[in-house]
Length: 315
Picture 1: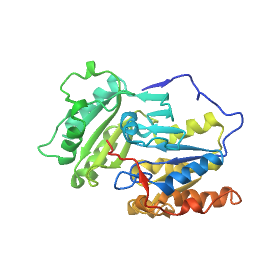
Picture 2: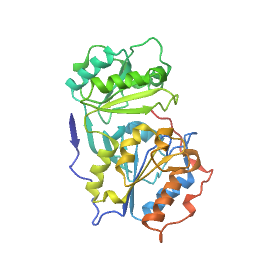
Picture 3: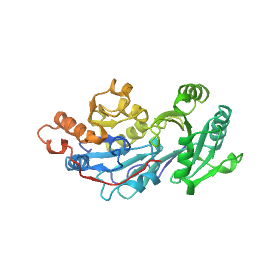
């Protein structure tokens, strides 16, 4: 594994620590089902900024995919992308930290996934992680084929040229719903040296994406690094998510909420707010502020409004 720091610290370390750190997932959390952002959620983010809270989007998207959907003036300070493999300032997009798999790690993982006859992609290193080589191990996999079609300009068949591929951000195996439990168990058993993240497909909402990253890479680890850089105590953190790839971040933050559209396993474990279509982010912010700064909170941004901005489609 290689970790690259652009200068070892953030560009503008504040004189005193921020009032807190708010981290939200994007797809299915801050982003609504119609691929728009609710005005109430954006108002909540702006209110946090006024109160001195740093605002972070933590997404599984590549930085290319994130930048293709964000509306002008999205009120956040940082974006953690590729599930923690990279972090960038916002606005501006300066990448602060990135991680990648080395050739021997890629070769080993590719061999295991081929042996399991899984359909998978190998993503190039940051900032080009939207470019990928793909290997088909089955006869039919509509979700796998849909992702290749979506990224047709950036996708190419990957044969036996791993040594020429170079470093990679991650591997993504796309598994039909009925095959997911067995595939997940096998990958966990055979690739213990990597971080393995389970994600529900953002394309068909049913298939499972098994994402493989360097050991120690996750949304929570990168958030922890950012908090240390900013001097923010973990006791002043809030995370919001909706899927299994948010689990480590939900467990890390002092306060955490899941959307009403999250799987039942997550709703059984964590406090639940409204869905991504019902301004759950705004509700989470309002509830958090009532605890950490009741005299400075506002009830207005907790109300959902149909007005929305931004269009998106997740990688």
